[in-house]
Image (cartoon, rainbow, N blue to C red; front, side, top):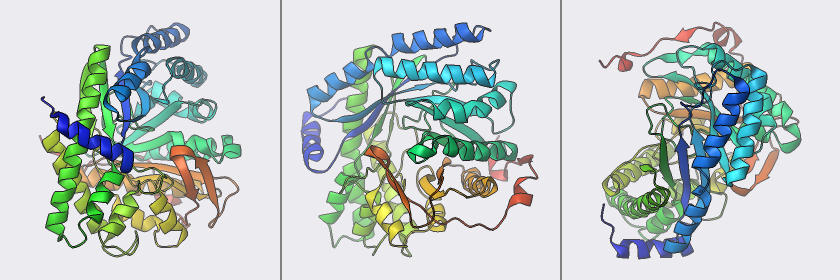
Length: 453
């Protein structure tokens, strides 16, 4: 693909004025050749492969940052879901693996390593069960390791037994990390229709159909889009869509250039650009502010879902024209704690959990970085996960839940994590019981949409 240097120079202004950055360059590493039948040997083989393969990843990304003047906010690693090469592990051995993965991430200098994961949408292997059992201790005692479980898909339906298990994991993980505001839950996400090339944590993993090693890029740029919308106060919605498409085209071109260069310098394959607009808590870098600039009084107003749908569609259309390979999640993220506009809307009472759920029908991922009272029962968390999974299953899209029941916190309180994780106001959650429904267990069958053969 040919790049016009004028396009790149324009993005330099975006980085200086409009908070534009490449949110992550994520190296995906296959672990399929690491299984040996012996836990200790397998763990060391995994550690050595990660350290060897990703040895120059951070240094290379920094070199490319300097060359083009575009910040790469995070350098990360994703690995094959570890339940696959480690299917014979016990829970204790999975904990040992997690700690060694943490060592590997620290050794190569990445921000996070993701892929402490299992795909259980249709059922469990023994290794899947052991991994899920290990998560509270494994994630609660490590710093850089992230975990995800895929509990449903349009093709398979929803594994309600898995949802029961992960809801209890979330409660346990919250208690184990209570002194840090239940931060362990911020490193654990539950998916329906998880994708194999997602560069964003906590849900990244290196899918089994991916190459040996690959570089996937997640762009950002809410501030760029916000600036463009503010400069067109009288545009109708069709014109506004075109403005968003043009800006997304530009930032995606920059993202692909950066990703290809990072891949080339490490002699690995370039994978995809994830088009997601990913907010931060910094002022002017908010999806919520974009929706307000489009004409809403605040996020949560009637029309919020329609505005978000238009934004998401325009982002996809602009990015698709700009990149040879688009993948990952690709859309607009709406994490509460990581978006200062979302935080403010919740604190004012303008944005509820139910409205957020409606918004997830038309945007990327789902209920993300949502904090709820610490005494929320596990079955209510399971019900919320089931609802969000149903949206993904029926609409054939990726949905997810990253929920944090913060011990000792109640509605009106908040928990401040700092950095990109931001501040999470404690949101009300329905306390009507869904216990009987949830504990029926089994699997919700796949919908008719899944019968596409």
